[in-house]
Image (cartoon, rainbow, N blue to C red; front, side):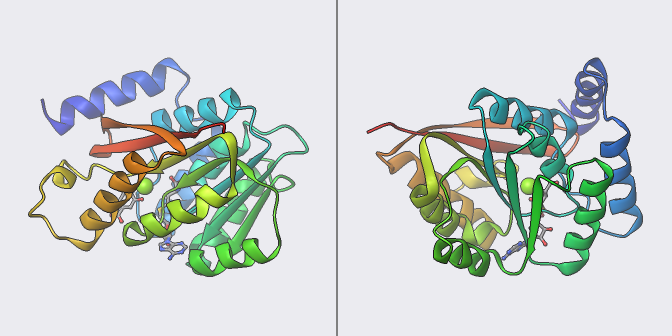
Length: 223
Ligand code: SAH
Ligand code: DHB
Ligand code: MG
């Protein structure tokens, strides 16, 4: 199997469900034109995030790692009109692009983009004694994934989902000798997820237009 085949089937799946609508297509187009890295989730994974948010009846969503707002749009569309998505982004250029893309998608009233290092924004959320989240999507710097998980456990309600992108990294995560900082970060995250008694989790390998990777999905157990 090759990347070319994965791309063909990913396009087939995305096409089946109508591919990208205008707001999503414009978000990707303008992000690429502005030189943002092309590392947004695929349409197929964006749709999965949307489905998961709908499944738990999410009213409050946290995203760590906004980029141009592509996954934020998929997630925010799952919210009721009075729902809220807070998304955290370090790079002000990315955050600005996201704000524009989210507004064009008609979701500005539901989405708040917070600019800064996620650890700092999370500490600020702590101080606000914010309501618990129904879904947390982790997709920023990989070495910080264990810290993001630790924070998420304190701020996700029972029944909430914690979802994390890029936890397989072309299979490198399973090679114990691979000590790349990103690989180590997600390996530690995966181990912590598996060892955590408050969570029930799994990891799905994915092959798609973005290559070979995987997504972790965890539900917060009720006591
Ligand atoms: N979720 C997005 C993709 C996110 S890419 C989507 O699928 O559409 C990862 C993003 O995390 C990048 O925009 C990067 O600037 C941001 N990022 C990296 N390190 C960060 C940090 N320490 N705090 C907040 N954001 C960070
Ligand atoms: C990278 C980050 C991502 O969030 C992603 O989905 C793909 C690649 C990266 O940093 O290379
Ligand atoms: Mg990612």
